Amino acid sequence: EDQVTQSPEALRLQEGESSSLNCSYTVSGLRGLFWYRQDPGKGPEFLFTLYSAGEEKEKERLKATLTKKESFLHITAPKPEDSATYLCAVQILGGYQKVTFGTGTKLQVIP
Amino acid sequence: SAVISQKPSRDICQRGTSLTIQCQVDSQVTMMFWYRQQPGQSLTLIATANQGSEATYESGFVIDKFPISRPNLTFSTLTVSNMSPEDSSIYLCSVVVPENIQYFGAGTRLSVL
Image (cartoon, rainbow over all chains, first blue to last red; front, side):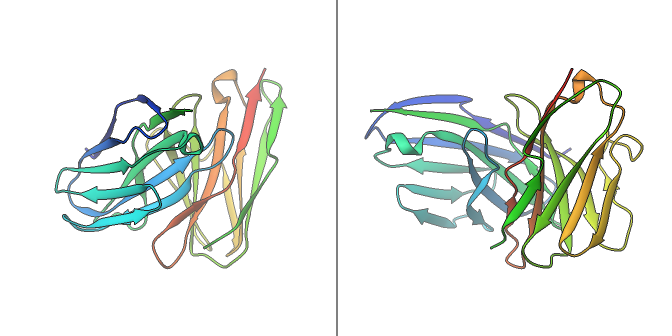
């Protein structure tokens, strides 16, 4: 069975304190891995797609990386506006466009 | 990208009644997805809706409880039938654009009394 596990469940950072969020996956065959941000009361907002091990994507203070077993979302010098829940999701080969979501990491950045 | 509108944004319903949630997208898409997000939890896929065919339901979800319509390439509805308090949740629709990116609506917050 395909599984996606995110850690930690919650993370509290001081403004400017860099850290990483982890997404571990066990799937029959990975087609793609996605990172989303979700603010309270809103739907998930797309951040990145990664397709192959070694691939990296960056956007402002965020950088996503992918290995054969996990993905990391690195947050450099976070600001309070980066506070949100970060979700990763995997899309498997042969599963058309369906994705399976992890449980998320709730990030709080304190001024 | 895609812009998705969901209606209603929230509702409070009585046990035993049904609620239909509408999802409108600003471009034609092949696949639309319906998710449930229970309080403090991640997203669980309910079903996939293709235009012109029956929806495909995930394990644990049945058509009698969550009937779905997909009359055209820009619109879909999800009905939550014979509701109980356990159905209190956020319901989200999403679409996939050709770039293989999934976009979400803002969700419908449902409370069942």
